[in-house]
Image (cartoon, rainbow, N blue to C red; front, side):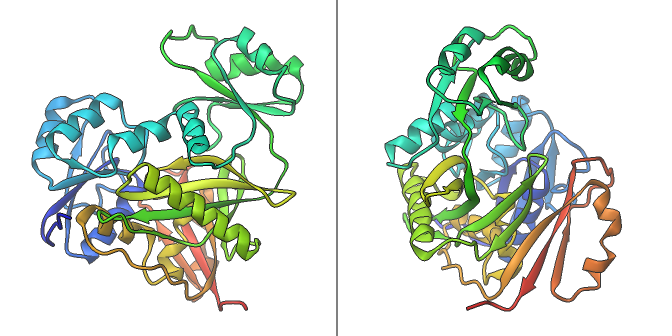
Length: 366
């Protein structure tokens, strides 16, 4: 295991709020940070030691970036494959490109879940309107059509109430544009009547050790995460099964870093995997104030070769996203000693834009 000494520079592709919180965690452990992303005056750029503002396709900028860091990681998984491959050829990259590749494509992701004996909702690959109509003979409605790549926060998704919605769904997700012949464009999934949604954040170190934060119960509004609550309203057996899935996934990917796995708990108590991301995750922000170590510090430790810490929660917590103009009405949180406010330094307030989050702590129950 190669340990990176404090004072060295850790690079991160992506310069949004996840990168910002990674940089702050790295600084606590004595590391410098260099962020790379396309937007100037970004949340991460405001706190990083160094910043490169360039397109992910700018190989010259990537070359300079790679020569300035000891190791690089990611704050989001939708990095262009050429950029990630170029970076991996010039410096250490954790997690590996294989982990990113699986998580970038819902088809590959679902096949991966099957390979580790983790169930998903019934699904079919779809690459044309005729294939969508054929898939609807196998997947009962209501169902959801999702783009295979680049979908997040509800983008690239359309819910079909009946098979008659097929053409409208296809037009919605494709934008009526002709498709490229390589790869599968979309996936049709059965709509899950779930009891709750949960997620588990797993960290895996260079030595193969995996530790998991306990499951968070997530509630979405307008296709975006609204709250994460810990402890989740699930029994111990379900929690153990969920952390088992996240552990198997991190091990199978040979991941060094973080892996967030989102799951549905069905009405019968079964677990169905929805998606995963090899990076810090919005549903893991509760760890910043309710645990002795948080998801960002665990990522720093993993990529730097430091020992991972066993997460120990010391409070019950509800994480709430602060979205859009809500950021102008948070005085009640700022005056509440139980509320820990994290703002992302975004000056431009727009509807649907994540401006920050707040962790509201309560004494541990039970």
